[in-house]
Image (cartoon, rainbow, N blue to C red; front, side):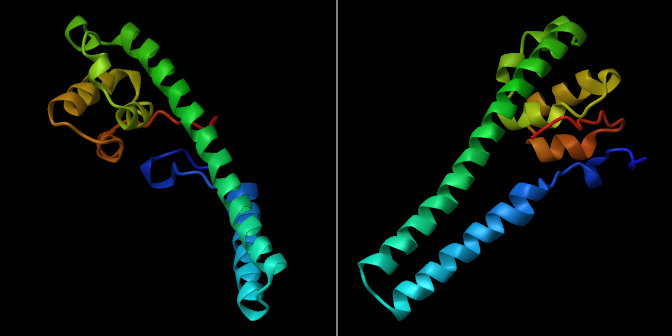
Length: 143
């Protein structure tokens, strides 16, 4: 059984993306640049441009997935906050930023109001919020 999720271990490595696809595309781009420098002609220069474009494409696809995930987190957390927060805080949900929603998703229901109040009053970013969480609510179903 895996260790419980905490601030120290909550970051996720996506093996296919982080350990295979990105390194291969980065090495390919570097190799094509080397070839373009060593043997400059239209073909080798175009291969270097294409290698760079493929690397950018991989990064763009990953960023789209993360943006969609952040939108879903904002929706889920807004619904949870509307259900759990006292009226004074529920009326201020719209003041929270995207990174704050991402950080607050890890706060257990019992401490959510305290973390939201801190996030709004101090104001805290997502990392600072995560560091203050006492009872971690794991999120293992994410991109």
